[in-house]
Length: 261
Length: 229
Image (cartoon, rainbow over all chains, first blue to last red; front, side, top):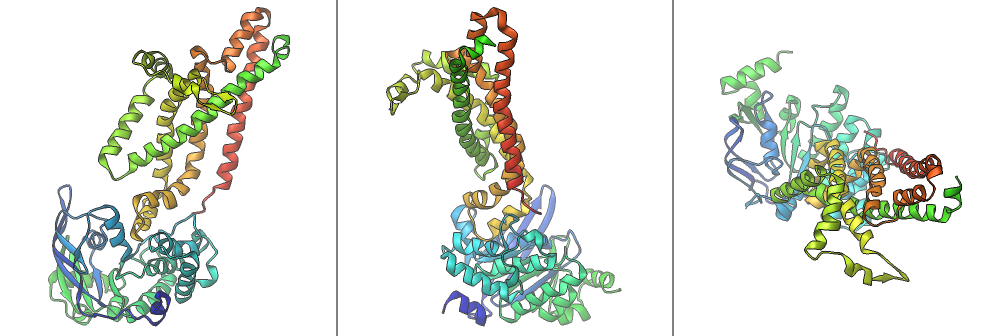
């Protein structure tokens, strides 16, 4: 089956339930600030984990350690059984397996939408330009941006840019997708179009780690909610349980503040 | 006027050498400066420190001192660059004087080129490099495919200043055996003491023409490499 066809049918469900990303006793300090405190978290294949928590709780940092955009002080992180390489070509290869979507989109400003999506497949996966463009167009079609393929990022709205960013990450056929507050920089009316793409992705069986404030997304798409506070995991729960009957006081306090309005 | 226009071929030959020095040293400075900048922002601490030391050393040394070192001190320990004179391209071969001047100008100018490029790299939002790394590009690809093309535009104005300074700095080579524009001016004024003012003005005009050509090219590039954000 070609990569394109695999994407179209969304057959990424093989081995569902096996551990894919394992964080074991992870600690991180910024100087004397203990930003990640003894994080133990296992994300299984096909699982959608939503990480929520107050700002400064370390949830973005946690997300960024999984493709080593942030280094860790202590502990270990493995992807598919392999520990994350420290640097060099091996680290680049690992990052190719992990898709990342940023709060500020970070589309390459000097490249067209199509070039943004084909850059990785051509340069990292060594696909031919034709194959990469075919794959890119099918992904852009899926996120609803195909007709804007020749435009530059600055010509698109925030929601459109973020959907392109998702397509760019998917073009690498990642084992897991990391979303670092993907809707936090968007106007309210654009949030839905991005969440729709993410829900679709979750339904196709993609393994996802999503740092977000979108409680609606957590309720509908998450298999598990991880609640962080002060650099530590304060509670792990099903979305059902977490929103209706949180176990910890910190979580009750947090939900009380955000769900009041 | 007569002193210059009567020997216009000498005047042109002088500026020809000035341009030759500026272009050759400019291209080499660009390459060396690019490597230095990549080393300075790169992930290898030893290279970053070495490039930083290089910049400190050559940016803080007067160009005249660099010239004296290359043209007078190095030959003392046997480095004369004279072997280069044997190599002929067509029926043209380069003098050791020219090579020494190019080496001195390149060593000095590349330190400034490095810092101009580094300022451009710093002007590219850090998220661009993060996104490039996140799709699996290695450091060289991140630089070549994502960061440097966007840095290029921000680099054009300071880089134009560096090359303009380089063009004028070639005049120091006059003291080290090169008959470039400044040396030609001295020859003209020695032979025609009554026409000094005209000679000065015409030589100044020559430099202005070269410098304005650099300035206009930089404006054109700036417009062409505009990156919308």
